[in-house]
Amino acid sequence: MKIITFKHSILFICGLCGILFLVSCHNTDHYLELTEKFLYEDKLDSAKLTLEQLEDAKLDEEDDIAKYNLLKTEYLYRSYSDTLTDAMIDKSIAYYQKVNDAENLANCYYYKARIVHDKNIKKGILLMKEAERRGNETKDIKLKHKILESLTDWNLNSGEYGLGYDYAKKNLAISLQDGNKNWLAYAYIFLHVACDRLDKKQEKIDNLKKAISYIENVSESERAQFYTMIAAYHYDNGNIKKATDYYEKSLSIQKNAPGYFGLAVIYYKQGEFETSKKYFKEAIDRGETSYKVNIMDFQRNLYYKDGRIREAYEICNQEIENTRYLDSERAALDLRNLQYKLDKEVIDLKRQKTIMNTIGLVCLFILLSLSLFLYIKYRRNKLKQQIYKDQLTINNYEGIIRELESEDVRKKQEIAEYNAKIAELQSSQQVQNLAAIEDYKEKISLLESENDIKEKTLNEYKEKAKILQNDQNKRIGNGRKLYDQLLAGGSISLWNKKDYEDFLQYYSISEVTYMARMEESYTKLSPRYQIYVILHDKGWSKEQIMSAMGISAATYRTIKFRVNQCKLTI
Image (cartoon, rainbow, N blue to C red; front, top):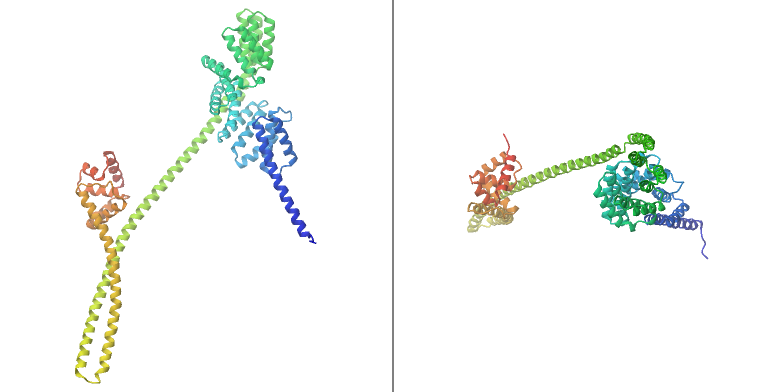
């Protein structure tokens, strides 16, 4: 029977905890992804369920908490929750700023802007502009679209129609890029409103027609704004019945200021003044300040033309009061200058970044050019050093060979002398001479042995000298051949790197003084430019040099200019 020890128990518990931790992490990631997916697909009920699962999971990772807070804020905002505050989203902003996550930061600033805008328009605009800046750093089209749509809407409602028009154009461009028909319906209706405020009549009609062509892609509950625009179009074209039907259809979906305003005008024209007055009041009560002023201005002029002076006067007082409030509000907010300032700061940052990048590229180019120049100079000097080194080695080998040959002659003479002495001693036939003969023979043998070694060394040096000399002769021979071809009307256009080097090596040997003077007179001359200088100094004409180098007149001028730049002034 196997006994389970305390050690085994601890290991088992640790392993089990590890598995549970991994499962927990996997579930957390899974539920976060699901929540994000459900919100993206507008499935708010499903998103609510996954968020509840995440609440029970007790998140402890900082990135998970930041993502949860963002998703929870988005859900609460889109569900019109009364418990929505910006406390959670502030924590997410702090985390995403730390890790520099542009996409999530843009989302955070977007929802924070939506939360605070109703209470503080200026702060809302600032936050949405920051969302725009961060969103432009991403490729998320849906994110960019909702930011642009908000800025379009807010600027139009704040009376900044010029900026509203600009943002409406941007919103349309991104909607066309994505091809989302719901986006396009709203993009065209926003542009229609902006054109209406800026009195761009034909563009206003064109955009309305395009918006109508996409109205089927807007849910029935969101069509109120579209119907008021269609009603206004029919009113302008004299079809009062259709205009009335569309205004009433709009109000049946949502009580809105443009709907009441349109009906107020129609009832007034039909002589139903009390009903008209009631609808004017509804329109004024529901409209933004800037829209209120527009309604009052229209109502005042209407009353004044019909001789209703006292009522016109009352409306005028209300209009003045609202206009003053609107002017003071606009002055305090200064939304146009605020947004222009923020846009200018972004442009300035981009310009500074471009300048820094340009400076960096210029520095890199200079560094690369310097490195290339030093490398070429190094290669050229290395080649020259190799030539000189080879020549010195050849000269050294020739000196050794001469010494060995001289030594060989001397030793051969000694051997001949010893042989003569041996012959002389052998002819006397004396016994005492035998020892001397053997001594001479031993010396001869030693000398012959040394000669064999020296001869082997001599042959080795001769072979090395021959190889080096052959290589030099081959290069000098090729250089001479290229030189002769050039003189005979040939061209260097097909020469390779080795041909340039061989030519200049030959010319350096045949014209030592001239080449030394060239090196003293110029700096950084490439092999091609050196050949130009040689031909020019030989008195060749411009046409001859162009033909020899295979270049055009423009290239000739460029080479001439650059060679003159390389000329040293003494």
